[in-house]
Length: 380
Image (cartoon, one colour):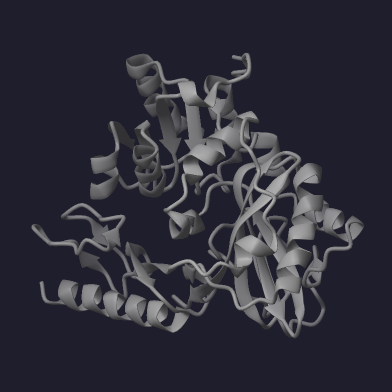
């Protein structure tokens, strides 16, 4: 079957949308807020995902053979025509092409998504644009000191580890470890124009000796001078048309000693969109994807405004546990596993959110809430 290409889309005419992701809660919640009817395919079918979804299907993986029956079900039953994808496709690139053959994708085309994981080409583009990044090589370095091994098709820091010995593996590359603070910038694009939504600070969690860079949380606060934000805006203005990025995307970077270094582009909706829930970001994502959005040319004005600071964090299981029956999750918890679910050590338990007037208070509240949940589960 050929690609689902059609006449220009009227974003306002879309009522029902299929959401496919490793975890679909965030997008289902955003779709409900936008007045859409979300149909969800994901790996967990969390309690709150089910509450937001018009209908849902849980699948074993996002591989095409597991995805196809669920997609068929929703097309046959609801005649859904549009799909929004989230995280989880980094290791299932062929599945995006399958979705594109059945539905109209609202977001980056699979070719655009896939291009971000051709790391040699990606860093070559950065070289051409004179955009700095930590040193990268594609064969094992002779000296192991201060090198990281990274998967070509990684997500959320999973699989990144320190390099200790020679290895020959075409699915990884090597990047020099760069000290500094980890940041991301959430931005909206239509293939040519770009608008900054916000700059964020993020942090990893060390789950084991070989998993010490796993995404843990982020806050919509970045201790960056306006000159650095302006510089990164300039980089995005170059990268968006080169990569033909559309919709909401995020750029990860490290800042150290008055310099910023690009790590990667996440060519999909990311967790940071939850930090800006006072904006209709999913609506704007759809509009940008179909070319009907208006871009705010706000530079310094948007950065000087101090919004309520919001933090988001994933809580990981410290050891193997089973979610108890009748467990009462606080209202600030999200991605709620079903009773009886087995959570193994290092797997996500849930996620939490906090709102405060300053960065320190946000971080403290996240830590307090995390400990509350861990303690409460331990008592069962």
